[in-house]
Each structure stands twice: as structure tokens, then as C-alpha cells.
Length: 313
Length: 105
Ligand SMILES: [Fe+2]
Ligand SMILES: [Fe+2]
Image 1: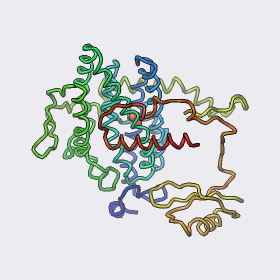
Image 2: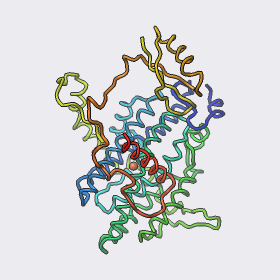
Image 3: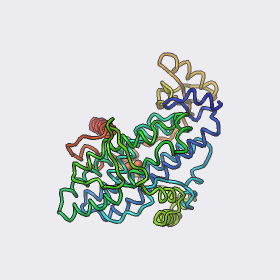
Image 4: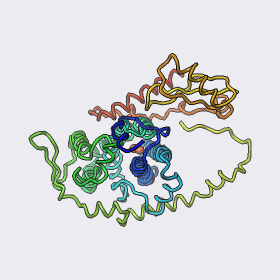
């Protein structure tokens, strides 16, 4: 199939591994899905400490379930990317460990305080879900199928995140104040989740023309702000003065792009932002620390018999 | 030789198991599958898989999940009484459906 035919046929779930697709399509799809997979993994590592740090047993359980889900999303997505035949799963994991794999800007920032968790679990997951829901109609069928399962699970993440925010904003004045501060710190990063405006985005045109991407950055940012600004306000969060955002006469959100730190954004995009580098290395160490588990499994000398396996709920 | 058959009704949907055929090799299995399973019902694609290549684990071998109360991982647990984004609503209805099926199983 040549690229013209791909563009002509590009519809939801149109292409599968049975199709002979041009390299340009396969590379673009790989870049997009690998980025998504890496983001799931790096996000999970960011939230993992809160399995311990969360203040109640219910929250700890929910965080452990959520982290398990996110790692699972990463696994599903590496599979969907691998079937394109451009990169193997091993290559993608190695690239991530070695600081070559790219992932979402938000997950380059450290998250150390519990009051920060809804910024990721509610706002970033909420933003991610806006995008993921549209990707159930992407043209690469294995990607769309992965999104079916991801979206099935994500509703819990977003509502759990909202529940934490609700609790904090109904807590002591101190909690409310710390939550507001965390919000102010994370808000610009969350706005940048959708990347620069469409005229500055380099990959969108092609990805959209072959049906990989279903909505542009701008459309997704609008949909996100429509849904989540009122939510933030409902819980008593004040939207920071900067970046300046407002609704125009047509009811569309206008973000003053110049109020956002694009130097930082593009430093992050190159994996050169300092805290992010630490997080990449942290994950690399975690991966190396459990190398013996993979070795044991692959050595094929696991003793037979023993306990029957217990499936996870 | 027995070949398990998976049918996909429309492009982009899942291949789901629909039966099996008896055939001496893969080529014949594909033809038989097309005749037996692709004729009456809408079919976009079929997979044939040698039966002995299918691994199975059932409820005699293992205790499957889903029986312990893990309410904390279901959307329905978080009763927020706020408007949810449409994709969150959709996720919740899919989870309710799955929860109902679990109850019936
Ligand atoms: Fe996820
Ligand atoms: Fe999530």
C-alpha cells in the first residue's frame, strides 16, 4: 500500500498487522504509541511511592491498583507498537532506560507530597482520558483495541483522583492551602499536556492525515478546559493568574501561549530536564534491580509443581 | 487435525472464537473455516489456530480473580455526585456491565 492509499482509506481501526503498510505510516505510529507506552510506565513510577504514603488503607489499595493498571497499559501499548515491525519491545524499553525514549512532559516533574496526587490522578489522568477516548478510533487497530481496555479501567483512576481532591478541599484550612499551592505549581504543566498550539505542532498533520490521531492538540485542550476548569472551581481551587486563560465570545478557551515556559517544555522533550533525568535513571535502577527475576523466568529451570497460580483480581 | 476458528465480523473488531474445523493442514483449515463459519454470518476475517497450540487454564486449575471484594478499584465506589466527562461515564457503564456479568457467572 502506498501513502496515498493509506490516506484515502484511513478510518477508525482500518489497518491491522495483515496490511502491508508504508514505512512512513509504521514509523509515525510507532513514535506515537511508544511515547504513550513510556508515559504509562513513567507515570506509574511517579505514583508508586503513594502506595505507602497515602493516608488510609483504602487510598493505599487504590493506588496499588492504579499503579498496577498503568504498568499494564504500558505493556499493552508496547505490544501494539511492536506489531508495526519498526522497533522491538526490548529496544523500546532499553531506549526508555537510557534516556532516549520520550514521554509526557508532566511525568518529568517530581511528585513528593500527597497533596500533589490529585494533580496527576485527577487532572493529568482526566486530560489523558480525553485523548485516549478519541484514540479508540485510531486507524491502527491494535492501538484502538489497547485503548478499549485502557478506557475501561481509566474511569476508576479519574474518579479516584477526584475523590482525593474532594477530600483534601473539604479538609483543614492547611490542607486546602497546600492543595491550592500544588495546583498552582502543576497547572501550567497540565495546560502544556496538550503540547503547543496546532500551528507549532510538527507531527500532527501527518498523523491526522493517516487517521492515527483523531483530534488535534487544540481541540483536546478545549475539551479538557471545558470539563475540568469548572471541576477545579467547584472544589474551591482558584485558577492561577498565569498562564492567562479566558473564554472568548464564541465560548472557546484562549490560552496566552507566551505565559507558558516553552523553553522548559522543549528541554523536557529532549529528556534534558534535570528532575526528569533523575526519574528516568530511577526507573532504570528499578529495572536493573529486578533483572534476576527476568533471568530466573527465562532460565527455564523453575521447579515444577508447587502452588497453583492465583489469578489477580 | 483440529483447528480452532476465530471470526471477526467487521474490520477493526475483535476476532472471537466461533468453533472449530477438522482439516489436514492450514490451507485446508482456512478453506473449511471460510465455508463453515464465514458463510452465514457477516465475516471480515477468520483466524485458524491448531488446537494443540491453544493453552488452556480453567477454574479447576486455578482460582480466578473477581471474587474478592475490591471495591476500591471500581468507578462505582466513588460516589461523587458531580458531572463526569463522557468518557468517564462510558468507562463506568462498561464497568457496571462487567460487574453484573461477574455476579451472574
Ligand atoms: Fe493509563
Ligand atoms: Fe490512568
